[in-house]
Length: 85
Image 1 (tube, rainbow, N blue to C red):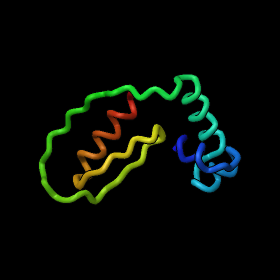
Image 2: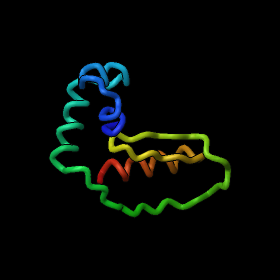
Image 3: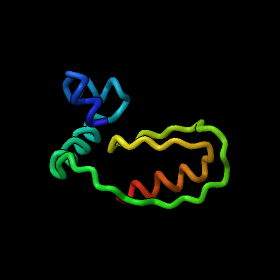
């Protein structure tokens, strides 16, 4: 989301409004991003694979991480675990 904002050329307020994000929430994300720097720490998450079905769910996290899969329960577990990082 931060990368999309940086590419957009919009003000923080305009970008948050366009994306349907609360302005102050977006500002907090941006502040956290800037404090941590643009580092990309790798965090291994093991989620058992139950199906070989094609991807049908996509979740984009504020960090820019995109999670795709077909099993709603597995995606929910993965997103929850990534949110703790």
